[in-house]
Length: 430
Image (cartoon, rainbow, N blue to C red; front, top):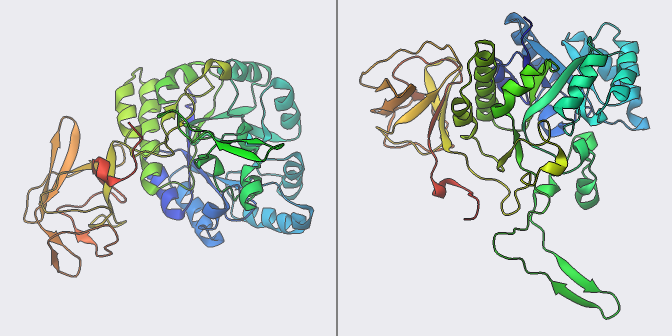
């Protein structure tokens, strides 16, 4: 049986490695302004992207290169050079958004599989057929599509791969077709520089043009001013339903500009859910325990399993972002011997260990600290905070660049986390 692919975001080389190590089968990312995440894409050089592709291929995994921006006429010659340069790196597919770019990629890189971006808004068999005939091997369907419509497309075009978003930020507009950022700040969303204006609070006014009177509208407490702020997508509780459909070839996580911890945790949670599905198991609480640890705007299952008119809980009106259940307190270096502090750490603090699935962790108790298991989770305490340079710290804080010694070797990029408290950051209004 061909298992569904788990596809994770890769905004940097580090996040690429983390997503793959924590369970992703493939990652997607880009290196230039032809990617829809220009701020993320700039963090990849061509050399780093090449290294990322080699890292993935050594592990039998894939990298999809994003060339999914909407180019101006003045950029077409540069785009052609970019397509040729990216093809030379030998990624496993290009992700493109427009018919013209699809055609151009087919001409300049004829052997490259082409995936059609969600920005193309494919919702039905007719559009899917057109892009399939143009050479698209996979379609990343619109976020507004239903599982029923996915089944219909798969029935008519069984050789066409279908990819769907299952987790991450949701756009206020129709699959990213938004101009609010352009109007307010001149940053063009479909060219990779969205300012996320839909996440801002807004005040409402009523004006009378005849008298010049202007009234500020006061809202009832709890109604909120984040009138365009969509909740985040979370379909981990519906993965069985999605995979039972037989229509989905790849489940995708949004978030190239999000943190390394986000890349790790989402990959791990959905890896567990997918593996459990093929083993005839379902443990929703386990998956959601991981996902609820992330910062989020509130979660929704959006539109794949429910039609838009049936949903009335897709917006967070009274806050823009909330902490998750946990705060990251540290991340292990690539060698696995030390960690960098990401939050205030004191001797004897209990930290939960978040490592890739299947990791072999040694339980120790020595002068540096100890590791132990409780209720199916692994924890660590440090008896002393000894830096790599030998200095002993009474406490370390985020921003401290001194690697702190670990009591035993951990897998690269293991995270340590502690329960979050309200004073750590923004919480939704009560």
